[in-house]
Length: 337
Image 1 (tube, rainbow, N blue to C red):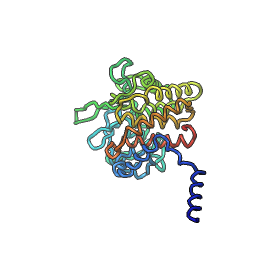
Image 2: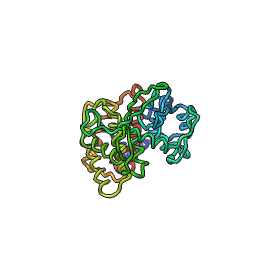
Image 3: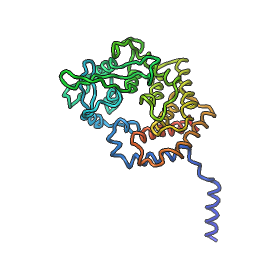
Image 4: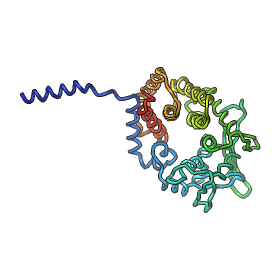
């Protein structure tokens, strides 16, 4: 009798509580990627640029980065090297230091000086900022290939020899979008071009909103970061132009980019991060149709992509994890349902 009573009580409790809720789309993806990053913690810690996407940076990690990087002068600007290799993304070291070289590994002002032990010199971040601006090249509006701004450095190879190294410029554009207080003021770029921050960011916006979406392997890695870049740019603007720009950005990502089949994992990983940044941006409001669209995208990715994250490049996992962290935050805030 007691056993029957106990069983009845359990059944009654179960009936009152109901079945456990179904997990939200993307939750299983977030869990398996987080587990893989935990297992591969040493690999992730060796890439502070991508680890910073998913967890706070410690001051000791900033110091460790400065121990690894050295610079050479190309006549106008510091060119940063890891060993014998120039940094992979133009402005990457600068943008990281602007975000993490301040007190407690927080943001640093342009007036802050940073010591580079391999060179035995201190440079003002503003000095690096101004020098990097002079290396930006804006392709012609009808140029073949990528029309995004690029960076060109003359890398010294001997007493009288140099070679030109070209890099994408999305990290430098991010630094301009977030730190330049005179966005309409002209400055001289690479080859004597007259540029301004507004002109560069307007070009990035036109490329994103009007060009075909990124493909399996985009010609410029900056294409994968345009949502992040343009959200940072719109965040500094006020009034109706900013709201209109945000709506156009939302429509492009949800209506054009996310539905496309057959993309490579690198593109999809960045799309997840872009989606996370969009749904946590101030002022974003999603319709019921948008909500269903996002759910469908996450369901598809969860069932088809990153099924064996132990074999996925660590940088891709960091982008997925960064996006899912923001998506989960948007759910807690009620932006996503």
